[in-house]
Length: 388
Image (cartoon, rainbow, N blue to C red):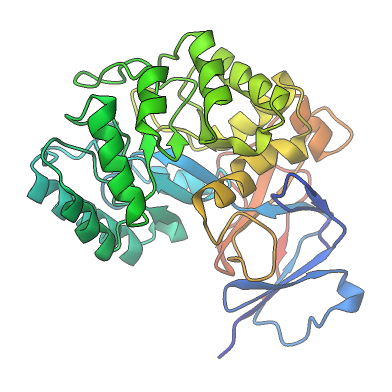
């Protein structure tokens, strides 16, 4: 049976596209988990819905994407001995998480056979099990000495599409890392590099020279995880390559604003993507992506509708995902939200640009309602209603 989701009475529709962040539409239809129509309700075929949502005037945006997490297995993290952290993040409007390496697994194998086995297993268990409906793109092996081209071919053939943070393993020099990153890219595996000072004992400094020599697709936590590089190195990274500029919640806020301002001067804000870098020593951050949107909008003087693009559409394009944009054929992954009760500002966008978080009323993944009123955000002025 065809599944048809119809969402009506949308007050504001954010697209995830920096070139057109707001769409003139009040209705969205998804068929079998994919967006099939966007427009005005009066012009659309809303009959035969299997699921109907009355947005009651709230804002709909593509589900947020956390570009940098460290999952382990299921909805549990040994890093903070915490259960249900992924479910809590769903209540923060995130519908997709991207692993930067399953590094917190106790006894993580560092031999080549073991690390490949773990990466493939990690990719499989999150493909087969979505905690609370969350999409977790995992299975991100850490580079270790002794890996050869055939290892990357094998990993890609088994479904692995990501590398964990370059620099967290035994490969510490740019020449060796570059060769492995090139092998990974040859077989369609995307790469991210640790940037800045050590995060935990055993990790080390990755400076701008190594980042540029390694040539990864994404500059992981360019604002440090936790310690940022000196200002001149951050600016050099922005100016000297075209890689994704990943700003994280667990990094240095001042360095985050420097990255934003440099990217704006370069007219390359489309390179900015957001992550939390959790779970980590700072804990987990269910509202971390929302907080980054509000922080960059308010302190970085970015319209809120553009700041949201950092959290969905930019990441979608950078990482070649089928989610994070409002467009026909993309996954029906959404967050519905409204201005928080008693928060200052004339509307939700102005309130966020004043530094306030919105209240989340619903998340939808692949056309299925996965959560309703958030238990973590401030209460929204209005809530969408699931009719059927």
